[in-house]
Amino acid sequence: MLIESYRDTALEFVVHCAMKRQNVRTLSLVVCTFTYLLIGAAVFDSLESQTEAKRWEFLQAVKNNFVKKYNAGPQWKFAGAFYFATVVLAMIGYGHSTPTTVAGKLFTMCYAMVGIPLGLVMFQSIGERLNKFASVIIRRAKRASGARCTDATEMNLMLATGMLSSIIITTGAAVFSRYEGWSYFDSFYYCFVTLTTIGFGDYVALQNDQALTNKPGYVALSLVFILFGLAVVAASINLLVLRFMTMQAEDAKRDEQDAQNIAAGNQPLTFDDDSTYNMHGKLLENNYTTENDETVSLCSCTCMGGTRCLNHEQFVDPDFQPMDIIESTLCLKRASV
Image (cartoon, rainbow, N blue to C red; front, top):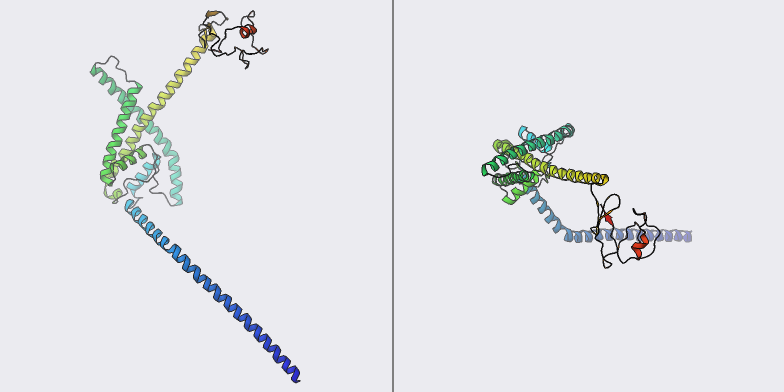
């Protein structure tokens, strides 16, 4: 009995010691883990906290500048809504205000589908009327100056619309510089971006001091600048497009007339060496080159007259053989019409 009691006591002691060791090991692991976490937190704090503080300062400065720059007040009252509708119709798209409701977004899409084509047609029509008015003024000015030719050419109209566009942009830049507090260069940049419908949105008028509600005259002036300026730009673009279309039509007509004359035999074929043949193969003017010039065969192959070739095209004159060209000291260049 004593032996069994001693054995049970020893077994309990061994189990207790093993449990104690496991508890110590677990506690050590917990302590090491939390110590490691504390060390990592300290390192990350020292590495990132200053950068985070600078980032928050930068974001706060950006927020303050944004609020100061776009302190426009209510955007969706009638004046602001009319300004937004003008921006949509003119395809400028500053992005200074956007609809947030589902109904507003849906109406914006439907409104743009009808308004943008309508605006394009309107600006195009106003541009044509401006060009017509400018042509009348140019003709009267030429008559008054005693010019021999009193017609208003396309170059005159392009010059007139270009000058008018420059006047509008420079004048608008001065006005916006005064009302918005921008530099003249920034105002000129805004006018150019607006009238070319680029509309980056980095500069937007009527966004300071609640101008949309407190300065109705300035709002009206801005809207007139946008609408009239786009009409003048449309006039200039209309002239450029018309000029290019006229040049293409003239080139096509000239090519067609040349083809008809050649087909009818009214215009001779001229070779690159200035030799001229009629449509029946008769030599009208002979001006062969010497053997020192570049050798180019009259056939469509690449023999270049240096070797005998059986792929030569049939000549107009059946008695004239290609081998005569190859073996001769004379050479011909490829013909062109």
